[in-house]
Image (cartoon, rainbow, N blue to C red; front, side):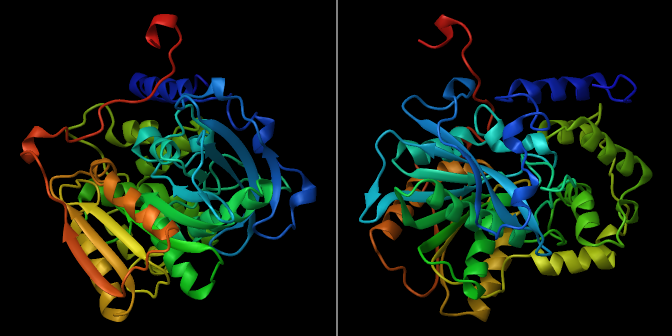
Length: 433
């Protein structure tokens, strides 16, 4: 780390914490996350390279699971070809359909905007027992994209790849093409698959359902959108979330709109903070630390007061939003009504607009009382596990909108509200009894 960077001790600590969670050295120096010129023009969905037997001792994954990593070709929001990395998490005894092992494509929540934020690069695969570990332990083959710009950091010609944060149609490309490439790498996989995504990935999963309406993929059985990002601009959004969106989309928007500059929507301090994130490679923990600063009670807004009225931002919003657009195939939407990051009313609106515009759309919407952003995943696991099983068993979801609410066994106040732990490796014999 360059000592000339003006960063606080807290930021340095968060960077160190993140680096401790890396399974390998930085992706910038790991040969797996690089591609050569021969792959520059291969079509989207093409498998570029595969590591069939990843060294699981480098990771903190459940016992009796195996790991593979691969790189494939995808497409950005503007249609440019982009190499993207992904992982496959293997159960010991997979569930099978007539044509092979059952596949769930997992789309992760926000891990950052720097290349080292790739889940395949993290010891616990980022969302660990929140979803991917549990899916594998239930017998599903988990195919999980890192998203473009996370993991592989340069194109075949050496140009930097910028992560286009919450560009959901682009993430949908990453999801769909990752499944196609994995099916080539591993012919034993079924051609049928379900998509499950959370937060940033929830918006991506919804975008897959919208993509399917205009670009149908054989084998697609449906999508689950948990705590989804459906919009970036809404008066009901919490101010910290709104400003965080402005901060995180700025670099990607420069990539999408050549005439856009981050200084159009970020304050000078915000521009400096974004440069700090890009220079240090800081991911989610560091982003939070940089945005909050040393005094959590007085965070400085990195965005300009009128940033949401920027014409490029409004165009980006139109291009990436979920809801109100045609979908194909079953869609299960789940959201907790105590989500402090993405207010459930945003999802209410997106679901309602979709059902109004397309009455025949197959949508189930589960509202979870007292559940926060991450808790929407854990509180509803039996529901989405059963839903996935139904799709592979050929159960047909009825047309139209079905809204329901979870039944809670104990008083809401009795439940653990937030994620307050993380999965780490045991380094001494008595730490892993």
